[in-house]
Length: 62
Image (cartoon, rainbow, N blue to C red):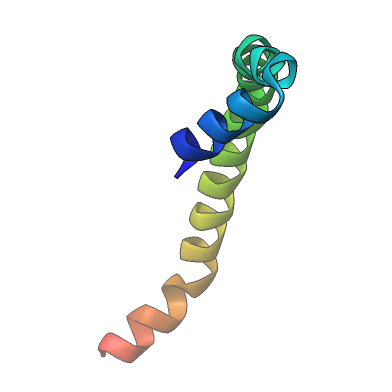
């Protein structure tokens, strides 16, 4: 789907298509640290949730 949209953009307005080809890797590199931070925060929240729910899981198992 993305390839078809890019081809349509290339046919209709090729300077924008060239700009997309040049800017996409730069935007990806800028957003990469934010993804890493998101993964780390998600891991910390999962550990916190597991610690908070541990007593309930132990009592339910008894």
